[in-house]
Amino acid sequence: MSPHTPTWQTELAAAFTKPSELLHYLNINTHSVSTLAEQDFAMRVPLSYAACMEKGNLNDPLLKQVLPHANELIQQADYSSDPVGDLSALTEGCIIHKYQGRVLFITTGGCAINCRFCFRRNFPYSEVQLNKQKEAKALQYLQDHKDIHEVILSGGDPLLLNDQRLESLIHQCAAIAHIKRIRIHTRLPIVLPARMTDNLIGILNNAPLPIILVTHCNHANELSEHVATACFALKKQNITLLNQSVLLKDINDNVNILQNLSERLFNCGILPYYLHLLDKATGTAHFEVKQATALKIHQQLQNNLPGYLVPKLVKEQAGKASKTLLI
Ligand code: SF4
Image 1 (cartoon, rainbow, N blue to C red):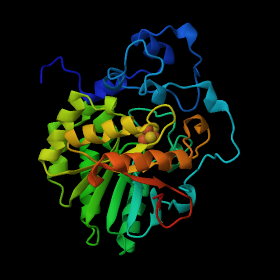
Image 2: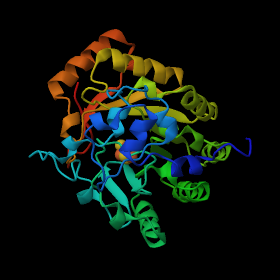
Image 3: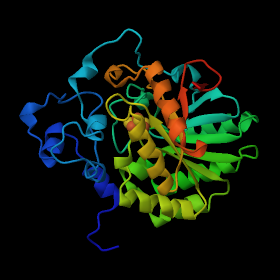
């Protein structure tokens, strides 16, 4: 690495946080666009993600995922701040326990990118901030619940933790005898591939338990050559790579777009895993694709692709014992 190559931390610090700057970078006239300037869920877009957008195109499918829009202020009756019932399943120690055998471990509230449709955009991360005390409680919870076999490091994005912290968490979870696998839910290989450093890959490769890395990618345009290189480096170390997507109105609600996504994911060493219906978080209604439309698109996908490239169409409902399969 040349001394001038930016590290992932400097790339992260330089992310676009103002709509006007991002639009300027994309050669889009800011006067023609109605965006939300400042709000609780601020804009954040790393340059490596913005570089995958088409210059001059306000309807770019990646730009639409991240550009704050006045539609976010529209209130809808069936939308809420906690659409999937995270808070009622949250223990004192940053563990969300909903399903048999596996739990989510909320490791950080930070993300490298703020997706406007995020189901946790209203999550009270400041109250759930992981500290030494909460970490001890989380590990005790895992220790006490012998039926938990899989820990899902989540957030926010767990790969925003520094390497030492991440390694320590992985090893502490792995030291619990009944934990058999560690899953990491992350959008970083897609939006900030520079995070996939040799050191991080070494940590994952040397983990005492199998690591399953579940990426979040919604459109083939997100999968640049840089992303593909990062994913292949992970794949080479026998790390299982799966992807989940969200079905988003006017972004990927089309069989050709989803077919391209599945094929491109496969070419990057990633298998499509879930296609989620939108979780109804306040401020996200303009992204919703109705279930009937989703089922039609999914049927077309099944017609066009081999089964291993067809993600499961699911929705998450608060209080249910698992995700609901829609086919
Ligand atoms: S990366 Fe995931 S958790 Fe972070 S803002 Fe996007 S959808 Fe939400």
